[in-house]
Image 1 (spheres, rainbow, N blue to C red):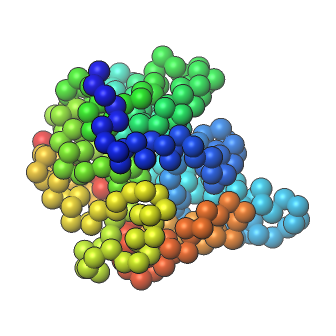
Image 2: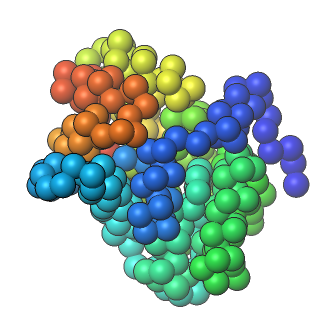
Image 3: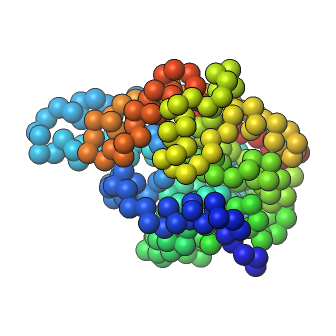
Amino acid sequence: MSVVITSPYQHSVADYWNHEKNPVNLRLGEVTGTYHHHYGIGEVDWTVLEGPDETREARMIAEMHRLETAQANLLLDHLGPIQSTDRLLDAGSGRGGSSFMANARHGCHVDGVSISQKQVDFANEQARLRGVEDRVRFHFRNMLQTGFEPGAYRAIWNNESTMYVNLAKLFAAHARLLAPGGRYVTITGCYNDVYGLPSKAVSEINAHYICDIHPRSTYFRAMADNGLVPVSVIDLTEATIPYWELRAKSSVTTGIEDAFLTAYRDGSFQYLLIAADRV
């Protein structure tokens, strides 16, 4: 197995996630025991702000978790037909939430990869506690060079993790790992080419997460160059704004909420689901 972390930038990203303990990730995960590292979609049930003050925060946390789980379910809905004998790859798997949901839905094998050893250890412990460690495994590996065998996967996804890598290299790696006719799905934030260069708000998001948000066009160009043909493109921008409005009112804010809301509302930032087949 080759060296996992291959650049100073990747070291900085791994260090960030190895030390990350944001309540917005941990407290939401504690609601059901499924820990996500992404945002939510759908209409907010604003009645969570009503009722006893002493339980308001718990209601808001549960509602945000419902919205982020809805986002993961939408991604999984686009993976196509999956059999229990299939293998799936969660690229940038975080604490494992989407991997466990895929296994629960299909009974399939799932590999997750992350350059954060802390995330990998946490997710593997979750697999043990759930009794699925024989079918859901997490690996300290780089999504650009996993070392897995070519054509091994029926489906691969990135859930808000593509902004940490070069897309041409990422989609070349995924195309190699996907079986012919296999499906790739991503949900990601991208900056709007029509706006021009990244806006101030998008630049704030980049700085906050130590990432490099790509323009929308780069996704489709890199997919085309690597035999990934889009079959579905859904603009989720309007669908994610309510989640951010609720999060901005909660106790688990991280200081980046206003930047997201500004970028979505001024049109400089878009939240997309892209599903593509390997040809």
